[in-house]
Amino acid sequence: MKEVLGCIRRADKDFGLISPGDTVMVGVSGGKDSMLLLYAMALYRKFCPNKYKLVAATLHMGMEPFDLNPVIELCEKLEVEYTIKKTEISKIIFEERKEKNPCSLCAKMRRGALIDLCKELGANKLALGHHRDDALETLLLSMLYEGRIHTFHPRTYLSRSDITQIRPMAYLPEKHVIHMVKTLNLPIVKSPCPANGYTRREDMKELLNHITKTIPNARELMLSALQNEAQYGLWNKNKPE
Image (cartoon, rainbow, N blue to C red; front, side, top):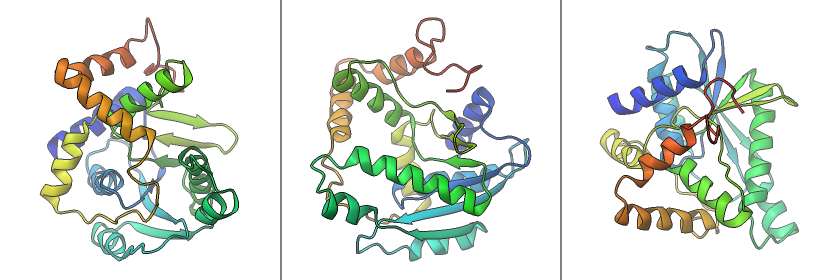
C-alpha cells in the first residue's frame, strides 16, 4: 500500500484534495478501482494532515445480479458508513431510450445521482476511483473522437451543486491497482451492465498498450504533458478545474 498511499498523498498535496473537516463520499461501483480507493481512503484517514469523515455509497442501476454483500462486509471492517441507492438508470437507458452508445449518458446520470446522494449524506467531496491510465485514455478519447485536448482534473468544483469531485488515485498506474487488489484480496462485484467491456474506452486502453510497446515510457511522458502548465495547463496545480 506504500505506493498507493504515496500517490494519494502526492495528489492531495498538489491539488488540495482534502480540507479540514471534509466529509468525503467514495462512489463505489464494486469494481477494482473503487474498491481499492475505498480501502486506501480508509487508511489515509490515519496519515492525512487534514482530518476528514469518510462515507461510501453505491448506486444500484436496476440490473441483476448485483450482490453488494462483499462491499457491505468490507465497509463494516473499515468502519465506513455505507449507503446503497436504488435507481432506474438502466431502465431509462436500455428500455426507454434504447441507447446504442449508452456509456456517455449513463456516466452523466450516475454522476448526477451521486452528487444528489452526497447532499443527502452531508458530504461536500465526491471521491471517484479514476487512476492515471483512465486520465490518459480520456485524453486519447478527446483527441481522437472530439478533436480537442482534454481530460478530467484531479479536483473539480461543481458550482451548481457546491460539491467538489476529487480523484485521489490520479497519479496511480493501473498496474498498481491490479496488483494491490490481488495482494489485499479485495472483493470485486461484477458489473451486470451489458455494455461492460465493449466500449470506446476499452479501445483506447488497447491503443495505449500498443503505443507503450513501441515507446515504453509513453505513459510517463503523457502524464508529464498533462502537468506541463506553461503549454497545456490541463492539470494546473494552482487553478483546479
